[in-house]
Image (cartoon, rainbow, N blue to C red; front, side, top):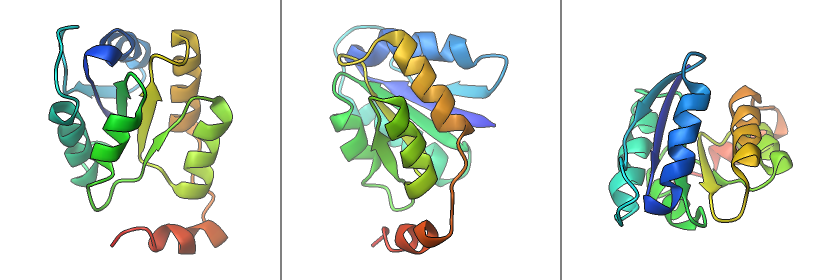
Length: 141
């Protein structure tokens, strides 16, 4: 499984920890940022979304302070379904019902341990399909 990951300055520490958490189990491509210096989140959300959209990566993970900026940016891409998840249940439902392919983590609102659990659940949960497949097929414009 290939994972594209990126963050802004507010999510930098969590991104670094998630890269280490996933290393050895998943193939991870880190699109930055590479320091805690202030940056613009679209500069990192777009490359992660592009990697997922072009199938260079199976899933994307984006981390910022609230999760909102990176989710809004990633969802501008036609084939991206980015979900902000701050609980394990939301991560599971994002995959089960929405076939989300980009996980957006709000670093300022959850612990690192919770972020790791959310990431694990997101990556391991399979799309349920069925009645949800018809709904998901109607998302793209």
